[in-house]
Length: 372
Image (cartoon, rainbow, N blue to C red; front, side):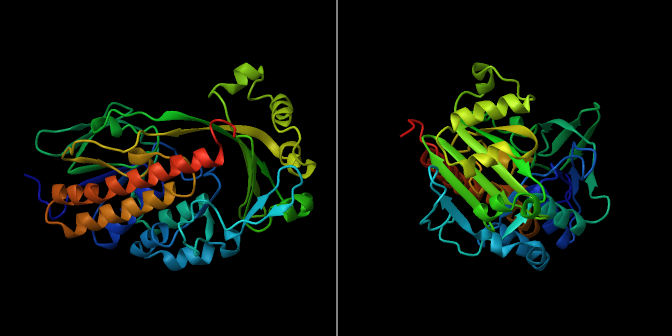
């Protein structure tokens, strides 16, 4: 029987949720190993800006002892939310984003900066880069065996699947797979926006701008370092480009098709489709079934998108970090690993079911399936 005093804990995935879990465990003197398939922290861009909510993401950062570090990096001014009329680009009355849940304190931080803050807080060597996990097998003694892509294995008292939408840990608990929501976002970006695109910079403002009509939406979002990130959203098949007769790598053809889709919108908004730097990036939106549910299995659990992938309406990273912090705190306070996991799952599962339901409703409001 393994001692529960110093359990061997593995976190699969070095995203915000997994790193928060590891950081809180280490703050309480527990050892943990994080396995990440990417070869290094800078192997790929980490995506856009996140608003950290007081009751979720910031609560997790407080538990991690990183709230002051977050405040130093965050952009409170980027909480600004601007709704524009698609036909005229006039600013419309808007109370704030649809997901604010009444929380006024939601400063923004770039995903890459947040990940860097978490990584820098961990003991050196905690993250094993270039270690792709291919699966996990629950063992009869209540532990979990990690199988790596190179065929090797390691056993742990607890394997925490924090490995996102296409989790390799999830099948040990739940046979659900993400389904396409019917909505695709196409991403574009602008560098040096204040200097090179001052009109767009003024139109977007300090935070997030949105314009929507007829099951189409344009988001533009301020990031750090004078970068503007744009998401062009619409309903359609996952392989919409096939019906459109365009190759995703053909930027000019994709642009021409999108401009046709958004015909009639104000020219100042269409500049977000015309004048960006680099290629378009396809981002179809997937979600897991609601509610997330599985029979408890000793030695394995999930957090974040691995457990409750939902449309990206401001909750995903916040909930993943709260999951990670609460799981770590349970592991520190409960007498046995299995008690901790049961306590965590009893809170996380109903909370994420409610959040996922709300996000699905929010997506339907933002981009109505009927086009109404």
